[in-house]
Length: 113
Length: 109
Image 1 (cartoon, rainbow over the protein chains, first blue to last red):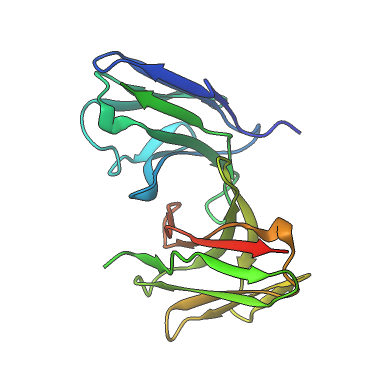
Image 2 (cartoon, one colour; image 1 turned 60 degrees about the vertical axis):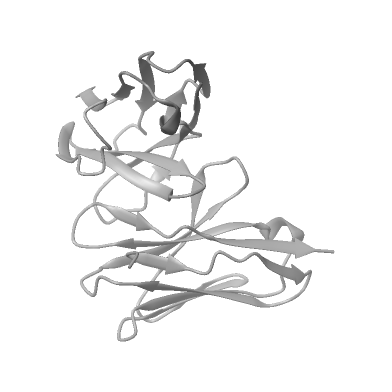
């Protein structure tokens, strides 16, 4: 069975550039989550969707971050403009219902120079 | 105060040892509890859910103490392959999971 698929696996870009991260959740999963992980702050929830609708975006750092889920099989997290402090590993996760554990993708390792 | 707190470690133990990790959470309304494992440069993976009565999965035992708001994980007969970071995870009354920053375990020969 295919797990959560994220792309790209690695991204290196210069500050000021737009960055788009992509996620395909596990088929049949209704909830999708975007996380950011750094050494200093650990794993932080940025935003999550239920049935393609954003439910809680209180973890989104600032207006430079935006996320969309146009359909049940695809989501994007966009950073525009990017800054060096955005460097982190970004994970996407999905789950079937609110009480089920979340399954994580391999992550995108983002470096902003 | 962090919502979920863990001792970052590292815990360095020899093969065959028994090791225990604790975790405390601040939200008394929390409803679901998990332990995740994360290997270096990999994604977090579910290790086990934690039930009120305590539960065991092979060499791993998880306990929940709601009154004191802490969760524990016991690993018996440690293997080299158990070396990883163990994340304590709590869910309140929403879909959001709150992750601890993890406890690093290093098992040596």
